[in-house]
Length: 387
Ligand SMILES: *Cc1c(COP(=O)(O)O)cnc(C)c1O
Image 1 (cartoon, rainbow, N blue to C red):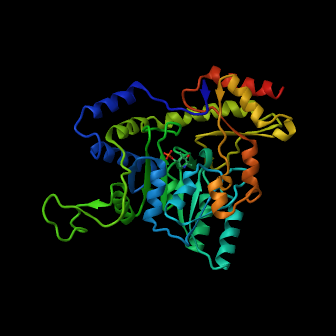
Image 2: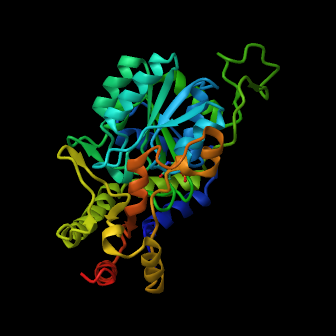
Image 3: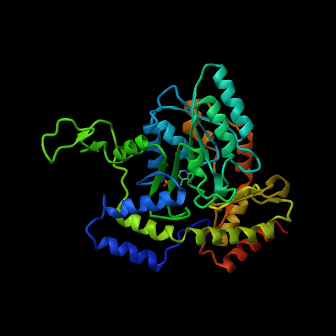
């Protein structure tokens, strides 16, 4: 079976996990701190909080930011549910801005128009959650200019873009955003099984996030004023158990050592797809801006199904018969029944995203994808469309 993504685990990874498993700390131990510190180094960030998964990372950011009912938070319809769901978890108001048809990230002009319009009608956009879709960063420099003008916070849902760069800088994310979130799910660039992380340069926020990760419990003498004794702890804010284990972090540390190689291998696979599909009119390969180093969490291929006289459904059925299991990233979030029912979103609200959904398929891309399997996928696709 060939899938669109999967983990790359070596004996070196397994050895590191086993070492921690036979040690003293399975959770809340030194390997978590080490993982956080190495992640900080990679992202050139001041603070990092490793958590249970990428969704928990977004949820904790939403709580730490103190979003509430009348706060409007904008994200992209072409993302995983969690980018929007984190807004719903804290009962704030979710809104979307369509994607730009080239990079598939949030559209700059539409973003500014929407913020201006809402501002003029007395509504406040509190934050933007930009998604560096597939591994192509948003137009962060320009987004930051808009955000500064309207006093809006920026969150980079960076779950697709570990190892991406802007002007050669792989630590661009925290340069522009107030918070950056990562996921270490097995399909992402590096994995801890389940896992995630939050980056910030704000010490106060960092301390808050650390408390929220573990029930809001603290023994810190700056917060706890009247201790009953050494056992004493207090809870001032409602937190969760969103901790990650030490053996997961051991895996993360070992994976992190190989990130550059992982990204290179993804780029090499993308290059082969580009070469095969770029000359074909029916297909549109991912566009990469000159300033961008794409890290190819996904390889989104767009197919003009109208022109092809074949439906996407037929293609998927055909591929499954050949043991190729692809995915579509994503069903636009505003068209999910929950969001339609709650906000009245409907077909036609974000036409570029909807068109993208109709045409997109995510081709297999992961470091261990065999050359022969990739050639097979290319051949099956071409022969289906009789090219
Ligand atoms: C994977 C992903 C998440 C959520 O991560 P989990 O670790 O699965 O909770 C959030 N946003 C985006 C864009 C993702 O791709």
